[in-house]
Image 1 (cartoon, chains in turn brown, cyan):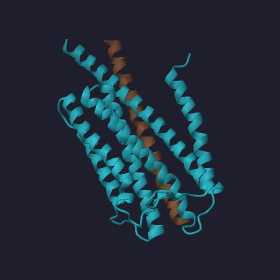
Image 2: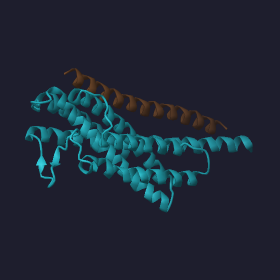
Image 3: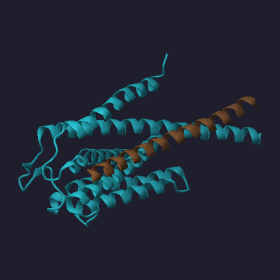
Image 4: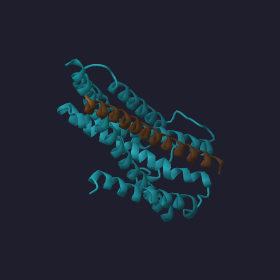
Length: 43
Length: 236
């Protein structure tokens, strides 16, 4: 039972980690894009 | 009116979240416990599922790499890269879950057995592929160079699959098509249904991650273009 728990914890941990990284990438790019668009609109 | 991609995202969520819960219910509650290996055998459902998606992801990389060699385009390059990244994540999950299963079944974390070695080589090829993509230089040259690695990795996929059949090791089980005439093996109907459902769910997860990755990379291109606009304005 211990091995089963360990395996699924790692599987879900890695998947959650990857989805978190994707989310962070998207959030950072959105922020960067907003700053650039604002700057372009001002000038 | 909602954009089609947003609508598709919602459909994906609506399918994926219940499918994940159903999959976990089937694995932990509904499917029977295997007599020899006990509860640890349940690792099999996600171990096989992630391995299948890793193979699928690498075939997709291979497909886009062939197209890139013919005529490199940004979308082909992006699709291949995203699929390779997902493939690497899923191969890592396959290896780790396999090691844990190996520890419970063979009492060792690792053994230099053909399936494990070929999977490890596959993982290294695609890690190298991802590094090559990040190299400095002319974009088209890098796309073509990385495409060669992508295709080599893709050729390795059938070798990984056939490894336990060609080298006939007794350690790694051949679940389906065991024996010389490949008619042996098989699992209980409940186990088979759980496995098929898990395969479907993880494939759906792959499609979801692919879409998300492509969306992010397209956004990165938009940022790049906006940056060039800023530079142009500053220069003029």
